Image 1: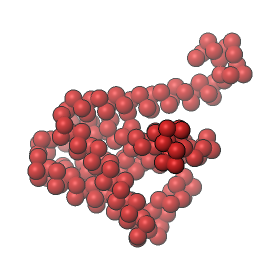
Image 2: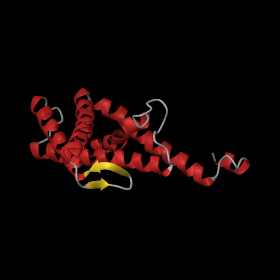
Image 3: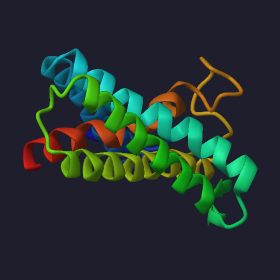
Length: 173
């Protein structure tokens, strides 16, 4: 890419090169940890993905029904603090139920709650990061594979942040 910047500056300037490099690291690390999570076993995958999906789904539902206060109006005007709290509560309930039936992570109850809260907050932050990137580039979708759903990357934006931290938090807790 540096060579392209030297010989084809009209197609590859430093700003574009930096955007490509940061994007590759951002997406690459997230997907690397998806593979690493798989190595932890099926329970870890179900736990991490479930937290993200429950958090997203119930944040949306709570926001639609109870949302009054904007979470990040300049980046994502429809997200609310009430929705965020609803997503976190759903993530906690999900993680407690899952841990009750299969405690493969071997974490104490308090640690499961801390893990759920942290992963829900990180998932919401990952979603906001993707929204900020799309706003910066003035695009509605991050790709054409899933039009109207934010693009393919928008389906996995929370995973890119949550999965690396999942590994560190489980090891720490």
